[in-house]
Image (tube, rainbow, N blue to C red; front, side):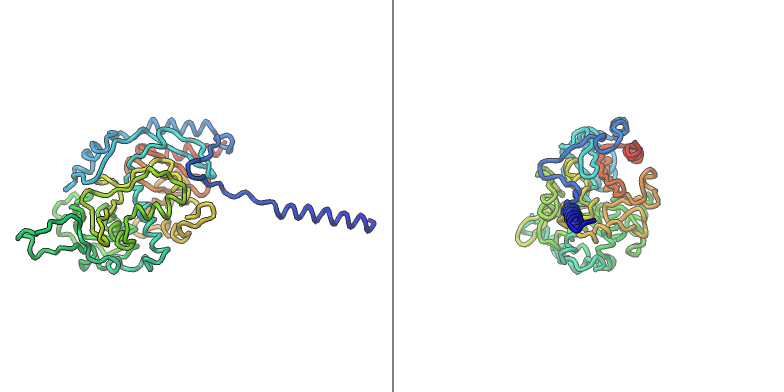
Length: 408
């Protein structure tokens, strides 16, 4: 080969290599605010028939509870001791869902823009604002005891002149100052293994899902922190109050500024507390929000905003190159609780040993609320699915049908 041909070959090869080097690799898709690109299942290599089968399955397995959330409450939790509602309810909509694959919406049904109560999915938003406090150093470690972060708290709207029978009673509440409660860490509270004791917002801890044996309500021995898992909304609300003390401002503001606005969520979601859960904080009345809709209240949100949150956790807290929640926090949230291996930080339900969803991978998880409300997250399939108002027994059935769509 002549020197001229060799030089020409070298130059062409260099140009080709350079072109290959500068060709940008397409990154993952994240929807912008106020818009979300749709693609058909077929465009994304999925079976449209299987997706449609999943939608029909959902509609055939709508939860049987009344669409009146107030009526539904008094048919269930309202029967508990002190089970009366203290927060708002609203009628719910029809069975609704959104399927997001590789960031794109490939299916939606029902009323995806309707703001409905989402019950205990609210807990995942609560654990997120606790995680943000850890990321920012407001909480030094989840292994710290909570008591050191929570000063005595003044309730709002107390009578100016106290009656004589109130003389000598504490005027401030100290929810983490009993001998047992002083030993509780943030980790215990997040994993629902604290056995926190006390009454908050008029609800005693023992009255939530009470023991069938009434003799144990008031006199049972406290479990060692971390030893026993018990799902309990009074304790969740105590965590919300503690987090409010740490942030020194309403938790919905924290969530909006640090998570919901950056991920492009709508401005229609509302995180509410109870009519009696107001405190005085830095001279202002602030509502301590609830971690669910057990007695009313909690998060009212649409399915599209729920899907954006699920997409954020799927991407380990990163949204389009911006790390909103630390990857470490997302990983911690997904570590099994020793006393209940299918539970991480609230409300990350883990598919450990495929116990909860036999048809899904063991690495999948979901944010869960009564109703059933579910944000299913599957990292192996780059999949997020929001399902609202489905019978609990049908959860695995709809997941199976959607995953079958990948076997086109």
